[in-house]
Length: 127
Image 1: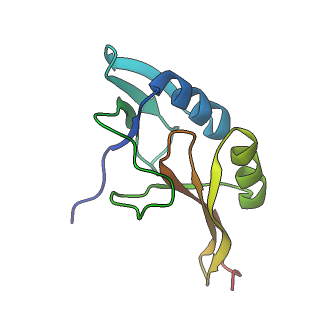
Image 2: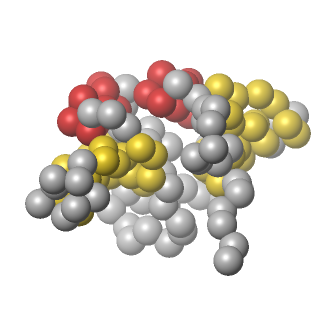
């Protein structure tokens, strides 16, 4: 079985997008390839993976278009609070809170550079 070991977020303004994710999720960033790739450290522990912000090559897709890439979802303690925080930091709502029965609550945001990502609050009683 093959598990994800890395993810990338493409951006036309990597420093601004790094600041968004640092504020919203507490991630840290450091340069890997000057002006092109910045490493993202998402936390400690056995769960999760680290990734990178990569300078976007080409035009950004318009908001509202179908997703044509993988969508990453991050675990959070309070979904409603994190959705509100993301909106206050400049994100747009892609899909509000909904239940995944027996697993928890999920919602999706569009970051300030047009990338869709998910937030998930575990809750075995979600219905």
